[in-house]
Image (cartoon, rainbow, N blue to C red):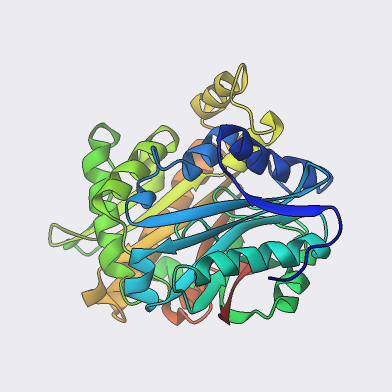
Length: 382
């Protein structure tokens, strides 16, 4: 074990008081970053709590706090997921949620996470993930000059060098794409959409919020099939699908989530969420005593300038076909129309998209969206 700098200690999080310090530290360290958006603390605590997050049914995590003279100055998580072992290779451990005052603190934190992973027979360390690829994956390495959208991370530009200096190399980049949704899509895309509208075998429908549990299971079932060959894919369990549906339902707008049916069979979907970061930024992570009422009122008004498409999927058997692209363009266009006319949307973000997912990148290019952020996942042999 590398010797710690004088006055610095690193210890595991043991109780509710420690977890509070772990969560609150991010607020102090990022307070002066104008582009950092305070997460809702109840959401972060729910993510970390095995009693509420079904991810813990197939995974375990250990949280660590770095303290200098008793004051929290850094944090990190280390996690081992049985589904990661199955789908990304045996011996693959992960880490995430890194925050530190400086590199002198960050390096021993990373080493401590690696030590914990070695103790569980892991031979490869990969990160950051907070806590899984379905939460906030990757370290922001490009795009620090503007805030992240809902469910995407933000970190100091300094962290990139700290991770590299700890011996990590790039495993994969994830891109997000920004676009002005007030502008019509290029003529070629419009012709493809119009052609689909004339095809009686195609139906693009809204989700039914009154049956949202069923709809969520349908969407995420398509997702599990559509993404199954993607790098980093970890299937969502039935419990995780139910959990995600419950969390998403309050922020679902029926005409911003579309299901594509072909000959009556659901074969694709696109999920768009209002950019909650815009609506919650001034709450400083607190829903109570007044934040919850403010958020409900803002959602009730149903006016938001930004939105994000975090999930989209087409059944695997249709991958590489013209139909798959046509359905994608139709869903994007229908959501764009609704977003602009009903909710006052001006900008959208698509992603994340794997750097080597050429079909999705081609769709993003065709609608003239541009890469606005790059998130990097790193790996290192242990």
